[in-house]
Image (tube, rainbow, N blue to C red):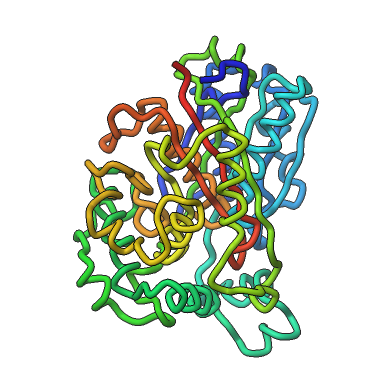
Length: 388
């Protein structure tokens, strides 16, 4: 296990909710302040800042400058605001890791918060961001319909069906039952039958195949190996990242049933010097239930056409040998708008540092995290490992 790699040394997460009485900037400040306290850092010890630009009009395009002043970050050597949709947060973490590894900063704060607009209020604005203007927008698509086209192509290739991906939702509900901060924690528990009988949204998705729009955010601090060892928690090293970018819009996908996860996952394992067999837990971006199924297959965890059996066997559930989305995922923990992609790396951190309240998986050392942006483009994977 390497001891010279940059590591996550502290973090914070805002519980997802609805109609939260704070602005996007205030949510960022809350998350950042708590993460710095968790890492044992004063504001003047922070040398880098990376944050996610808003996807809608919820916040300033000069967010990093705003946060510098709000947080009193007066000794920055690096700062940036960037946007890759759901893939932003692993992209930011990769950038922060490279900055620290190059010796350009000893500590970098990565922060994001989001307020998910209602479909009625912001649906068209959202679609204008993720749809091709000439060939997609004129048909009035929605996010579920476009994701549904990709899911159906994958299902056609692999022989998997709606009931197979319903297993994903049912499994993640079991994790949400254990997670006191999940937005669905107190809800009635759902089964595969409940998913299949819930109201249709857009083929092949029913209501419970879909993530829960809400508000929230989080932050993490990435530091040098030496600085992380002097922190209050187990350092969690970022061993290897991979990226795969195959298209910008759905109409540009040459093979809709395949995504950049087939590039980024193997790349992350090669760079980390690990294999899927070394992984104890997976945290996978899941705007819809088909996505973790596709990512598990494309990253090398299961063979094509077997992911439904993987979930039915209980392997992804509490007590299983490869737990997946142990916070409940976006489907049951909550899909926090712009910041949704940070919850996967935060959950991996909580698990590897032994601080996953109510849902801690025993004896976890290695995690695989995967996120993507927009219409299943901008795929980014990382292998994390806790210090010995």
